Length: 265
Image 1 (cartoon, helix red, strand yellow):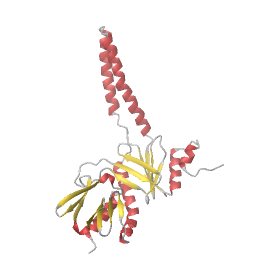
Image 2 (cartoon, helix red, strand yellow; image 1 turned 120 degrees about the vertical axis):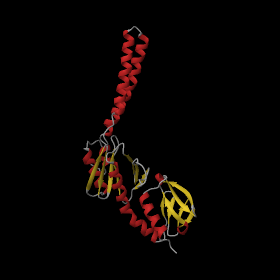
Image 3 (tube, helix red, strand yellow; image 1 turned 180 degrees about the vertical axis):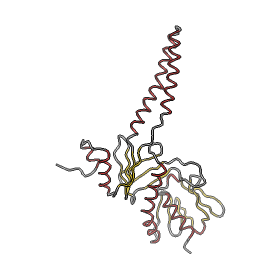
Image 4 (tube, helix red, strand yellow; image 1 turned 30 degrees about the vertical axis):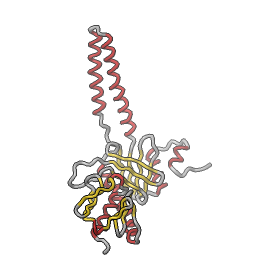
């Protein structure tokens, strides 16, 4: 008899394992360390369901009145129409019930993500890539939190509509990834290597984009408030890659600012 050593082996073998146990099995398999926090599904917004109910009730009432005054064809047509928002409300209710099981679990060395009907996805801070749709700045309006997590053999998308306390889990994930991976990136650049972030590359001499190199001595500012990475060269802004395509943006930003402010002479 073969003993499964991965959480997905257990589920595929047909064993019924409680979700909490399955999450901790994934944490053990990925060596994620001690559990730190859990973020459950965001409360379902039933405004849509209530709205469908009001519309269906109104149409059905008019249909009954039509039938009562002898307008059978019109009344039946309205009653059939009233079934449409009812079906839409039922579908939304099913989605809300399915999403209630979703959860994010933070550990010392990584994170797990679960959505109903999917396998538990596990990621380590030292190997994960995080892409964030928009980056919050002090002078910007409200930010919609949407992160795409990618790791060896796993991918997950988490957003504020699916998970409660979005600002907390977004900050916790980004800060943990940055603290874990930044030292290795700094060491690589100090050794003369180029560290890549999507289409962008950073080295001691320059920032590169699609094969074009911009020396640090020529870069006046680096900005990402527009949703794109922009650099200011001789008083002119040059737009580069979208922020959402940059893996581990906060590491990129920290490295780029260090290199820009202390260029090699």
